[in-house]
Every structure is written in C-alpha cells, then in structure tokens.
Amino acid sequence: MALHLNLYHEIQKTKALKRRDPLKISLYGLGAIAIAFAVFYFVQLLHMHSILDELNTVKAQQDKILPLAKAAKKREDELAIKQKATDALVKRIEGRFYWAPILERVMQVVPREVQITRLSGDVPSDGLSHCVISLDGLSAGSDPRKVAEDLRTALAETFTPKFKNVTSTFKTLEDGAEMVMLDGKQVPTATFAISVQLSFGAESAATPAPRKRK
Amino acid sequence: MKLGKEEIQKIVLGVLLLFGLVYSYFDLLLGPLMAREELTEKSVRGLGPLMVSEKAQIETTKTMEEKAPAVAMTVLQVNAMIPEGSPVAWFPTRMADFFKKQGIDRVTSRLNSETTDKQFAGYRKLTWGIDFPKIEFVPFASAIAALENEEPLIEITSIQIDASREDVEMQHALVTVNNLVRQ
Image (cartoon, rainbow over all chains, first blue to last red; front, side, top):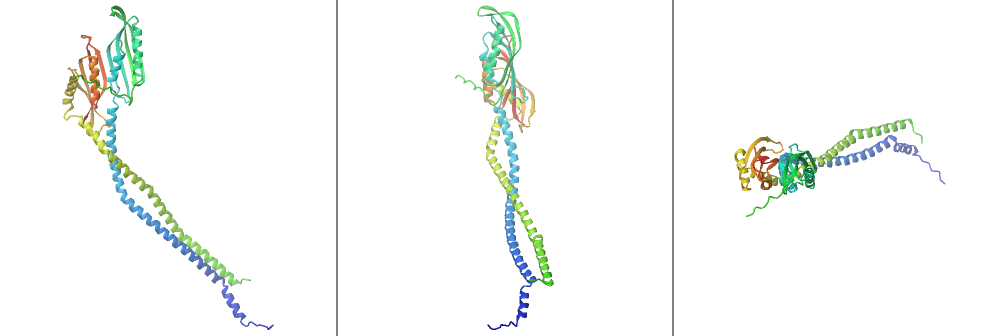
C-alpha cells in the first residue's frame, strides 16, 4: 500500500477552523432567528392591520348609528310621556268604582221589614281602592234586632262575590221606642246603622244601563 | 474538540448578541405591537354591544312609533268627550239635560273644587256636587248606571241618599263626582 502524504493539511486545518468559527455559526443562527422573528412580526403586523380595519369599519358604523340612536332615545322619551299619560287616562276610566251595582244589590237585599232612612257611600281618594258604605234605618218585626242582623249578613254575602275584603258591621243597634203596623199587626222596631267596607279592583264592572221602553 | 480562549470569547459574544436580539425583539417590536393589538381588539369588542344596544334602541323607538297613532287616538277620543268652553258653563247644563233624559227633572250642580294631577298632564280635575232634591230610588239607580256607562270621564266619589220627611216615597240625594277637563 502506497504511503499517502497530505501536504495541504495545514491549509485544510485552517479552512476547517474557519468553517467551525463559533462567531460565524452564531451569526448564522442569529440570522435565522432574526428572519423567523421578522416573519412572525410581519404576520402579526398584518393581523393588527386587519383588526384596525375592523375597528375603523365598526367605528364608522357606530358614528352613523349614534346620532340616530340619540334621536331615537329622545323620541322614545317623548312617546313614553304620552304613553304614560294615556295609560293613566285609560286606567282612570276603566278603574272607576261603579256605584250602580252597589245600589242594585242594596235594593235586592233590603227586606220589606226594613226601611232605610239614609244610605251614604264614599270612595276615599287615598289610592287604596276601597269603599265605605253606611246604611241607617229602621227594622220591624217580632224580633227587629234579628231582622237587622239578617240585613247585615245579607249585605256582606251579596258583596263578597264581587268585591274583596268585605266587612259588614253594626255601628249602632238599638230598640226603637215606637211601634209600627206591619201586616195588620203592631210590631216593635229597632234602629240600626250598618257600615260596609269593601275593596275593589279591575274586576268591578259597570252594570249596563236599562233599556228604555219605546 | 477543545475550544480555545478566542473561540470561547466568540461564543460568549454570540450568546450575548442572541440575548440582545431576543430582548430587543420582544420589548421593542413584538411587545408594543401585541399590546396595541389587544387594545384594538378590546375596542372592537366594546363597540359590539354598544352598537347592539343602539340598534335595539332604534328598534324600540320604531315599535313605539308604530303604536303612537293608537295613543294619539285615545287622547283624541278623550278630548272629543270634553266640550269647548268653561266647564262651569257647560257641566251643570249637561248634567241637567242628562238626568232629564233619565226622568229626573230637578238637578243642581255646583263646583266644589279644582285640582291638577301630574298623572293627567294637560287636564285638570273638577269636583262637583250634584244635588237631587226629589228622587225615587229605582229610577235614580238606573240614571246612575246610565251616567257611569255614558260618561267615562265622570267618576262618582260619593253618594248620599236620605229619606224625605215630607214624602215617604221620595228621597233626597247628593252625588259628588270628579270630572276631567282640558287645561
């Protein structure tokens, strides 16, 4: 086997050393990293631009809508005031307390042994939707106190289905001094005062007016 | 392979350069960009609900605008029920005519008080006392029913019926009513 001598080994060693130069390798590495960073930055920059475009579009839309929304709010406030006033009118008309059903029911429950001398009713304007009715009168019969008591309970019963929280109480109930003629007989009397209290709501409705005969 | 002193210095320099590059990139370039991006995205996200609420506002007003003619109609109907002129001039006559139609001849109306209510802007509330010197209970109750049905702006607040001393068949009644009139 022939002896092979490399006379360029020094030159080759120098070249190899130059190739393995850490600074050069570091610079290459840094360059690669810098390129990667630059690409990533560029991508982010593009993304940023797209977001900015989106923001500008949304802002332009908002600038267009904002005056309309402000005008709409102002108009809504105006309409709300009108609506509220109208609702109050409708509520007043529809939420009135109707007296005709009261008079009708009182007429139905008062028996022939009783004479009502005073009937008064009041709807206090305290906004509590309640009514106070007072009936003063004279009851006659073999047991005039029982007649008055029957009237008191009948009043409570007649108003209960239509109204809420109905109470019927005697303010006074006293034996009368005079005797009256009833069914051809002299019978004793009693004077009474009954107070009826009731609450009403939306369910209270007007009694239709009677038809007129032609 | 053994590194020489010069090579070690070069490696250290290379590492320092790398640190410098990474720091500069993140702190001076990418960091501010990301912060700005985040801020912009936040602005876009913030404007979204705002625009939705503004659009909803416009829609609500549009719906209310559609209902406005009905509201105006109610007010017109109410106004049409109120005669022109001073209520003191027309109300007593109107009541007298109304009850005359119901078969009750003698009716006297007097103005008791006048109030304004914030609820009823543009209207004032008048309280009247209507006196019926001689009535029969049943026709009177029918007349009250008719009044309540035909005069929606009148609200009866109290009624008082007394038996007449002179005539047992007749009663005396006093009715207090509230009426809405234009201001």
